[in-house]
Image (cartoon, rainbow, N blue to C red; front, top):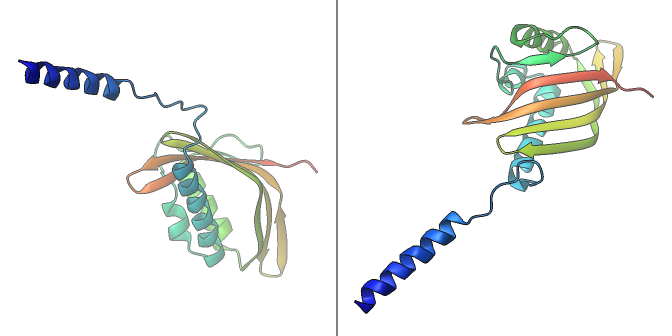
Length: 159
């Protein structure tokens, strides 16, 4: 009888402890491991641009009907337009002189993260140097294949 009572109490206490876990606060929790994964993904994206590897760059996107992009003050576009633009522009870069992401901030919300920064890019297209100083937001979703971009927003940064 005493063994049965002890066993029952252990079961009840165990049940209470497993159900009293603190809940995840998606807004305030930092998610440091996921944050580092997103940063590592961004570094790999930058490296694919420096290497001129367009297929690798495109593989960091989760293209679907949900994918959106804003750039140059134009109306929103989707997957096909984004891929065509990325392949055309970054595929034409002959040299990445500078690829700095200033004031980089990553905010993780579970399986969703946004990465914001001010670009300081200097890209050569043949003899022409193009400087890109934008405010950029990249929205990522964690998939079975890692963090993938589902939205991009580029706006000119005022000096």
